[in-house]
Every structure is written in structure tokens, then in C-alpha cells.
Image 1 (cartoon, rainbow, N blue to C red):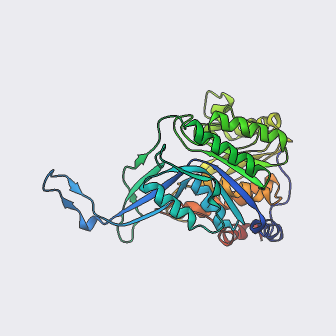
Image 2 (cartoon, rainbow, N blue to C red):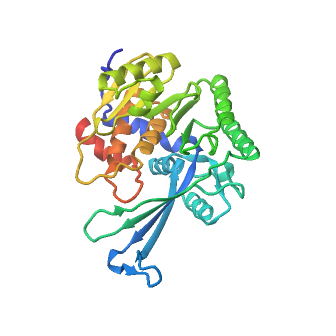
Image 3 (cartoon, rainbow, N blue to C red):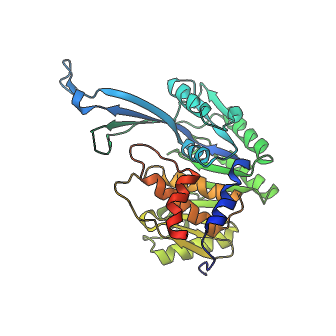
Length: 350
């Protein structure tokens, strides 16, 4: 295992990579959900006459795509030319809001995003107490999910969409967000289709992330956190940085695809199939932070940079800077644009 000795991304390389973004076409395959924020004014709190319980008055509601939609939001912010979400929503109010939010995004083609009465729209409902001059305080979340297997007919439509798009896109991003296997978009049958595509089109960039872990996934580019890496490799203790580097390098060599590991406050690590490893420390924190969505921003930026011709080393540096931008956006699942990434990135690399 070696550490990269390459030159860090300079302004010229940054521009050369990011100027290709508007020419890229990418598919985002996975569990799209609705992030619904309920902004509560504590000054308007009441007590219910019927129950005696507190009444929280919602003064503003905002909704945006979440889950795989958070990756899509970041790709939109980066200026990717065309985005093809592959997923589903229910025929319910949340589905209406999700579709409306997706339609409002620039460059999004919804031809392969399906609405069905057989599923509920995956929803994260996030009540926030809004106090003047203070960061939002998030209360207990209210989630709506599917707990039964994805219907076979819908599963077939999703697989057909992936197979159709594979010949037309520069990259495919897979995100599994569900808690229970086989209840979302990334099912065993869909992974079999991905495995076949990876063999048929070995040069197609496919990057996968799953909150349930990547065990059983075909040999594609992996993105995970340190705990998921430990679980995948069978570690019986929390891995230290040197062990993470070794495990990522071994995994990348054996699967012949890059492996990326998010390390929270320790930054981001990438391992190339050659076994070389690049670790970039996190950028300094500038006040209050909110880590929600940082991992999805990393996935979006890794995929975009690699699809635009960046090396593993360069992709890690750009994605690490994007994560720094996102964690400083409070009370929302943030995104990072090219100018914002450049601003975070430039002080270190000029």
C-alpha cells in the first residue's frame, strides 16, 4: 500500500474538471424520498383545550427531494447537464410534492421516475423550532416508509430503465436508503442487472452507497463510511486510520474498482485499484455545523469528478471540499455548487 504523491488539484485542473460538468449525463438510481421541513414558531405555542398537550404552530412548510434526491440536488448544484432519476413515489400528497420538487430542478428528466398506487412515498418529516438568531432545533422526526417487498412489476420497470440508460449516460449512481432489504429500488434483482451491466460495459462508472452496507453488491466503485467498511471486511473492533487505509486498499485491489471512505471529522479517503491510498483531512470548521447530507454531497462530487476525468486523488480533494461547504448549511440538507467548492478549496491550493 502506497500513499499518493501526486500534485494536489490546482486552479487549472479544477477548472478543467468542472467545465466538463454541463456536458455530462448521469443516472441516479435509488430511494428518492421527500424531505419535508415544518418550521415551528415557539412564540405561538398553545395548549390544547381537549388534551392539555402543547400545540406547536407550524408557520412555514418547505419540501425538497431527499435520500437519492439529495444526491440529485447536489448534481443539479454542480451544473451536470442532464440527470435521469430512476425510482418511484406513491400516488399520495407526498408523492405530488416530491414530483413537483423534482420537476422544478434544472436538467432533470423524469421519464424513468414512476408513480404508483402500490407504494407510499418515502418521507422524512422534520419539525424544526425556529428561534431568532439561533440555529434550528430539530424535534423527533416523523417518517413514512414501505415495509413490504417492492412489487415485481414495478421492480421490472426499474430494471428496464437502468438497462436502457446504461448505454446513454456517463455514470450511474446507486443509493440504497431503506432500512429493510427488498422494500426499495435497489433489490437483489436490480443488483443482478447491475452486475451484468458492469461486465458488459466495464468502462461505465457505477458508484454505489447503501446505509445497509455494500455486502453482496457487484464489483463497482464503492463509497461508504468507516463503520460500514469495518462491517464489510469483518473487523471486530473500530478501525484506526492505518487499518482503514489497509482495508480500503485491499478491497480496491481485489474488486478492481476504487473505494472511498468518509471519515467524519478526519476527512475523506480514497483507494485506487492499484492499491494506492489518498487521505485528505477535513477542512477547518467555521462555526455551527449540520452533518446531514454531507455523505450524499461526497457521492455526487466523487461521481461528477470521476466522470469528468479526475483521478481518485483529485476526486477525493473536490468531494472533501464539497462536504465542508454542506456541513455549514444549518436546518436543511445542503448542496455545494462549483463556485462554493472553489471558494472552500482555493485558500489551500493557490
